[in-house]
Image (cartoon, rainbow, N blue to C red; front, side):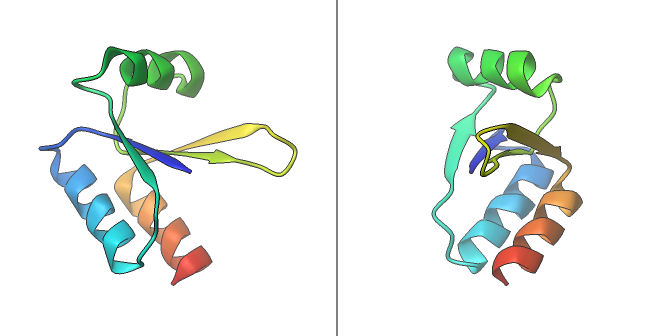
Length: 80
């Protein structure tokens, strides 16, 4: 799992707090300040929106989940 975010985005802050609260080790990728994460988010995820959680399924395919509430709900259900 990877989280694409902006450092100052309040929705991203809320999502990162949930990751910390759950004690998860999820890589964060700054899509505003790092051009490679910016392009990956757009090219593979399909849109320039954060926060975005990239999941890799068992078959190797990727799922891109957008929206802090959706991400937090998913993380709480799976790890909470």
